Image (cartoon, rainbow, N blue to C red; front, top):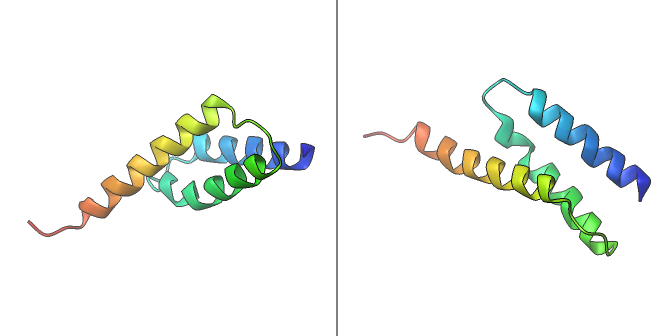
Amino acid sequence: MADLEQQLAQLKADILEDDSGARYTHAPLLAKLMAELEQQGQRIPPDIRCLHEELVNETIEAQFDNMPV
């Protein structure tokens, strides 16, 4: 469990430091770690839920960036 929490903390740091404009690419891994945490019966911290929601929104926005008008 500590390893999973450490992975979440490292991924959160990586996402927050990512200034490439493609932070949303981390969303699948974050979702996987969140699911593993829930499977272990642990509560997902609110900041992680919020970050995941931000990444999902960024993913949706990125899909529209290349849409022809």
